[in-house]
Picture 1 (cartoon, helix red, strand yellow):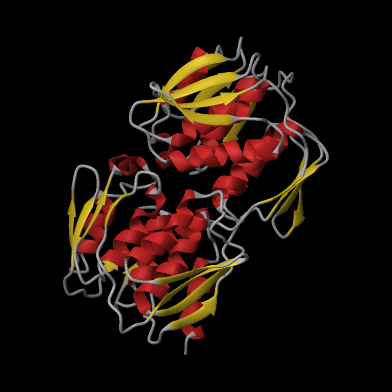
Picture 2 (picture 1 turned 60 degrees about the vertical axis):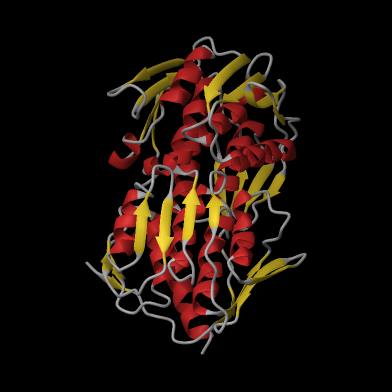
Length: 430
């Protein structure tokens, strides 16, 4: 069924409150589940990924109580001595499946982590191998290195291990989050090519907020995360707005002209994706970075510039940057992101093919995209079960009439209310 996206016929002028960061929320939820009773996490987004994390923790016996408006209270910790068998369905939530695969390695009882067909196809081998190296029992149910997988503590311990960094930073984060509860802590070397380093820094900051003195440094071997043995401390933790989600309203202001303000998002964000404002600034927008908000402005009479950018540390922004780039007066090149072919979709190939349907000149390279200015037209676009493609197509349709998509509900993964917010933005500038 086609979902027609209305074009914006006037410059934007509005404030947009975006959901809490699902990346920060899922890290904080794991820390709170290990810290135990007396803590809470607030401003948790209502998307599928965070919902899957909460349901997974409850399945594991953690007493997590939703008290409304994105607040979750923790009345108990994960029982690591429980021998109860548990099955957890992570749906399509990659972050949830990877974090919980590591978390259940602390449990005496066996846990099966599974997910939908698309999640079963995503790579997990580096994480499973690392857990095995730490002494956990890791048994694939079907295909090695993929879900479903059965995990239990076995003789899990700390120490020093090395993990490749070229597939996903979520593997290293999953290990770091459980590291305080390993005997002797953990020294984790992220070796070789690395992706999304900013997410590792986010992990360390969240862990510190929960009372564990984790550290991250560079060495000749690679990026080194050092986590001492210890315990998280229960606290009330507020999740900041999601910088990745903020990219879509910011991009609409860049593409359509006008102004958008994101309350409570600042340059001091823990999230690397806050750099999207810098990218738009380099492309010709004006950015205001205040103590309690961030705003993007573009005079519709001033053209957007092309950009040549390595996006290895901000890879979730690739679809948004690509869409803004098709409206630039000069060509653009996105580099360093070959690994995003293994995200919810093939975020290079699928994105390139869909944008080409609109007449966009997009060439897929080994590690990115080359985009040249051309005349664009309406088209029906497939979302490939990917929330980030769907929302970036919502930006594209801000200026190009006749854009429709399939499966608009896929945005529920991170921002269920996105289409309503987009419609508010469309009418607010009139």
